Image 1 (cartoon, helix red, strand yellow):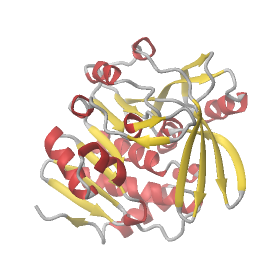
Image 2 (cartoon, rainbow, N blue to C red):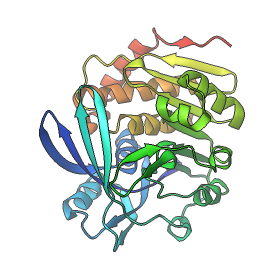
Image 3 (cartoon, rainbow, N blue to C red):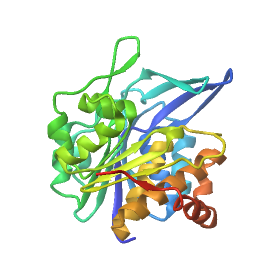
Length: 302
């Protein structure tokens, strides 16, 4: 893999409540995207901002993986922090604190012929930055969630369709979203129809992930449903981010749409079933998952 991957977005401190138990750990789309890309074999650089409250152990952890974190800057604002509560298969998310935005000056270092993934979580990356990096990179990918999330004074988060959605989607090559986000961005209730609409309207690759219902890929005249082969769920936090990184890793080197999507789904299923992101280095297990998935993939009717 000759290309460099830049990931832009806030690292976060996540407080996760599951089964009445509280855990505190590093998180954010930027974290899961970077770490999974590195473990899969990509040279990855992280551009982010954290507060002075960001634990030193987290930075040591990122260094130990071999990530380039020279683009992580400290701010006088607190680190972006979320509370995630899982209850009966549903996730409830609230914002505890928010770091300052990532600005144009923070991303001027990106170089040409690179792949850039914008892993925004709470509006910290502006459309102007996306416009700037799209003029420099070989491929730009975004996670849609960070551009749709808005919060009130109590930290409650809701999704809102931004006025800049047309400009944003017209500047990128790959979009990842879940069903709710796809519907919010387009106004189309059915997420599959919404994904297809985004693809056809903005000429982008759309990665639509729907948890246990599997995922969809839309690009040009191609559209496929990839069913989930996850047998049991140990951890789902970060699954969509890992899916996107795995897809970008494979697609940027092969240009094969369906193969890259099957690879992404297989990598993600290894993580969800184990809860251990470091299992992504198990190529034999990923290949077994891919061989199983090929039998179930279905093209969507035109």
